[in-house]
Amino acid sequence: MSRTVAFIGLGHMGRPMAANLVKAGHRVRGYDLSPASLKAAADAGVEPAASATEAVAGTDVVITMLPAGRHVLELYQDIVGAARPGTLFADCSTIDVADARTAHDRAVSAGMRALDAPVSGGVVGAEAATLTFMAAAARTSTPRPNPCSPPWAGRWSTAAARAPDRPRRSATT
Image (cartoon, rainbow, N blue to C red; front, side, top):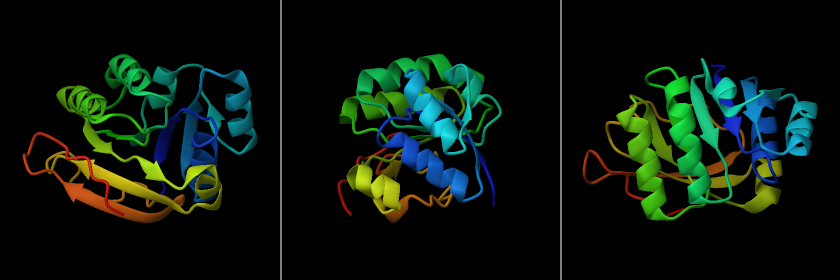
């Protein structure tokens, strides 16, 4: 099933991840603060958006791959209002647990589903579509697994939350 995906953060990791989604037949709208990163992603088939909120509007899934938790939190504050209720927000950034929980809470309180999904495998894994995802979500947040059947995922490891309102970050592979 083809999905419309917003991909925000098109740097060394995000660009090949977004490009592999395009190769798999998904429509991907991307945004990055760097014009060079946005152009490189566009050259790989990603539809460039003028802003993060434009990228997110009307999509099924929002994927973020950003350098730090503060970037994710600032972004979520800006974009959750632009997404349709029920949109899945999947953060693949490597951030601390407190920021991951805050991002989750921001998405869920705005009527979204949320998935904390940091990756292992580096740029080589992103390019080769062999990343390992360590995914965690509240049980009520993601009733439908594998929202995009990610072509850049070599392996998925999931952990359901012990409490229904909190994701538990998992480090299993």
